Amino acid sequence: MLITRRLEFDAGHRIPNHGSQCRHLHGHRYALEITLSGQIISAEGDPEQGMVMDFSAVKTIANEILVSRWDHAFLVYRGDAAVVAFLATLPEHKTVVLDAVPTAENLAAEAFRVLDAAYVDTYGNQLRLERVRLYETPNNWADAVR
Image (cartoon, rainbow, N blue to C red; front, side, top):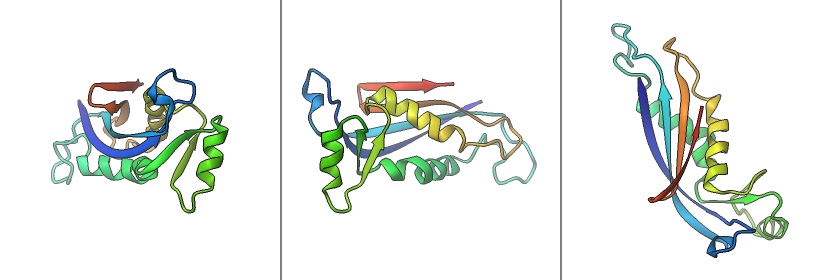
């Protein structure tokens, strides 16, 4: 069985070597879809009976280890030295420095890497992360899949 939880967050970024407007500092209303696979929990009386995982638990985990870090932050590539240095001059600015250019593809891959270890098989139902879909806009997204 597959289940998916969608979360949204706002963040800024830039693609430093891009040939269009994306090379400038700008932001997006990102959406993140987390798809998990597993067996439906059948233990009688279990609070998660009939579920693969409680959707609220999917959200709580994602918020704790990823979304809260990226929401209202500027996601910047470590190699974009001038922007990294500029952001460091802003007192208490929320900056996330990444080892890759913050394209939708790289952000989806990083989100998958971070979230993969978080969704553990605590119910004995073969729970595992299958896909992270990151929407940069409503019409553009990248999928990181197992």
